[in-house]
Amino acid sequence: MRKITEEEYKFFEKSEKLGVVGTIDDQGDPHLTLLTTIMAKDENEMVVGQFTKGLSKDFMKIRNKCGFIIMGMDMNFWTGKMTWKDVKTEGEEFVKYNNMQMWRFNTYFGISRVHYFDLNDISEKRVLEIPKIAKNEIRCVLAKPFKKTQKQVILRPYAKKLVNGLGNPKFFSFIDEEGFPVVVPCVQAQETGSNTIVFSKAPYKADFDGLKAGARVCLLAVSTSMESVLVKGEFSGFKSGLGTIKIDRVYNSIPPITRYIYPYDDFTVQKI
Image (tube, rainbow, N blue to C red; front, top):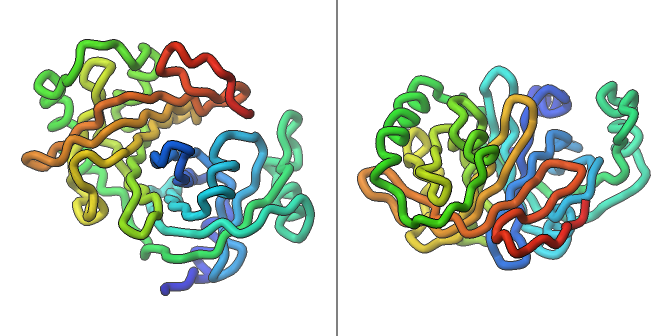
C-alpha cells in the first residue's frame, strides 16, 4: 500500500480544500458527505473532525468501509479508501482542530469529535482535467433531451440549479467489489428534467471499472458557496460512454436541518 508523503500530509492540513467522504447508508446505497475537515494523522491514518451531526457519522461506525476524495483549490486531487475505527472527544487531533483558525474563531460550530480511520489505499496526486471535463459537460447537455426516463417531478428548482451549474463540483459514488464506496469527480453530470441525471464515463474511465447496470449509485452536487444536494438511484449502464441515474431518493445535506426531501411523503427530520 502506498503511504502518504510529507508533502501530502501538509497539503491535507489546509482548510481551503474540498473533502468528500463516501459511506454506506442503511439501505446499502452509497452516501456522500462534504467533510472538508478530512486530513492525515500520519502516513497510515486519516482523521475527520465533526462539527455537525449528519447521517454519515452513524453510517461510518455501523458499516466502517469508507471512500474519500480530497481536492485542492489548485485542482489537484487524491482518492482513496479507509476503514473507520474510533471516535474521540479529546486528544492531540482534537486540540489541533480546535486551534485551527477556521474553528478557533467560529462562533457557531467547533469540532466536537474526531473520527479515526486506517488508510487502506490512496492514489497518486492527480489533476482535474478541465478541458476534457468541459468537452464532456457539453456532450451531457446535448444528450439531456434523449435521456429522460420518467415524467415524475423529483428535483426541485434549487436542486436542479446545483446539479446543472456549469463548473459546480460534483462527485459520483458506487460500491466496489470489496465493499468500499468509490468516489469519482463527475463535474460533467447534468439533470435531464428533474428525474434523471446523465453523465459521461470520460475523462476518468478507469475509475468506473466494476460499475454495472442496475447498481445503486449517488451523486453529490456542491456550489462554490458550499451548498449541496445528494441524489441516489439506479445506474442504467453505459452506452456510447454515457450513463444515467434514475433518481428515487434526494437528501438535503445542508445544516441546520439535514433530511431526505424526496420521496415527498417522508418528512421525518434526520439527525443534525
